[in-house]
Length: 81
Image (tube, rainbow, N blue to C red):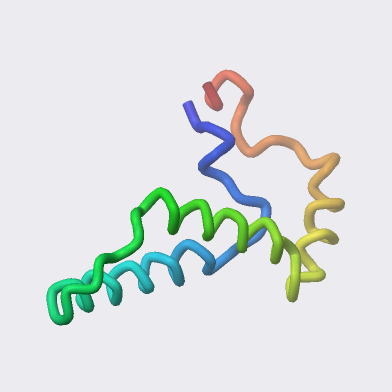
């Protein structure tokens, strides 16, 4: 079963950017002893940034969403569960 939390309405690099920051922080930890932030805090920040920037720079995303309202599902309802 595909959960709603696995599908985003728009593309975002927010999580990738935060993961990159985490890698850099962990390298600093090994090199300089600076403790990295906790994963939960970084992911909460990514979610917040993603929500704040949803749709920014992607005006066509709302047009595509509107066009899909009446679209037929790609798979029969029975295959989605």
